[in-house]
Each structure stands twice: as C-alpha cells, then as structure tokens.
Image 1 (cartoon, rainbow, N blue to C red):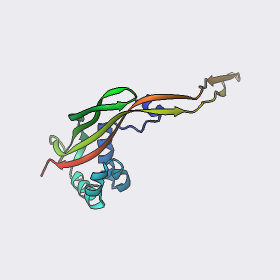
Image 2: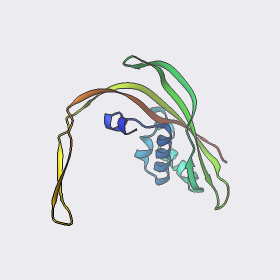
Image 3: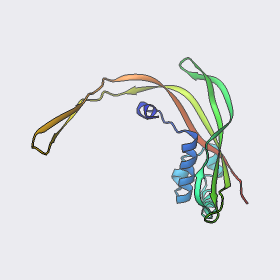
Length: 171
C-alpha cells in the first residue's frame, strides 16, 4: 500500500472507502461523505438529507464496524500497459452495530462499492539527499544522512473505489 501512495496513485481500497463514508456520515461532514461516493450516488444519497438520514440511523447504534468487503462481481478487460484482468469490481460491505450495550451487533447498512482497476504511468521527482546532526549525551555530534534518488517514471497498479449504493439492513 505504501508503494501505491508513494507512486502517486489515487487509490482507495473498498473497505477503507466504506469506513471513510461511515465516519464522514457519523460526523455530519457532507463534503467528505460525498467524496467517497460515485457520481450517480452523489445525486441521490450524497445530498445533505440523504447523509443526515444515515447519520441519524447510525446514532442509535454503538460499536459500529464495517465488515470485510466481499467481491460480488467483476468485469474483465484491458487494464492498460499490456495488463489484462479485472477493470471493474463490485464489492459489498456490511455496517453493523449494537442498539444497546451488551447486545450482539446487527446489520444496519450494506454498502455496495464500485472499484476501477488500471495501470497508470507516474512521474517521480528527484529527491535530494538530506542530513541531520544530533548531539548525544556526551556532547558528540552525529550526522545522519538519508540518500536521495533521481527522477524516474513508473507504471503502477491502481484500484480506485467509491460507494455506489447503500441499502438499509435493519428496520
């Protein structure tokens, strides 16, 4: 995962996307909630009223958790740069919680997520060598340097996910 972040790929795994959407809804942060949704979902559940309805329902539960994202379907195709495989995946993740302390968790929502998979080219700028000097307890200075790296291009795997639909599980 660190490699993808360092490569510049705007990537978000399905479970992380679902957790971010739940957290933003719980806190009433509309812009952050909307950023986790597909374009189509933004026009329906991504409204202030849609998010508020989710937030109000979540407020009745404690110990909220988002279960593992389970693959529901996939579409094969050209991922780019000579790679063939899944280009679109649909996942579902269950949001669960307890209505009272000590009660077993129950399903509240099912989040359906769409993830696009591709290989993309990224440019990495040159990183200069950096050094720091510290003085130890005996007053002796020590210099620590981290090596730099030249500029380069890379082709990296990207999976970009967004919430496409939310279904209520508990009444």
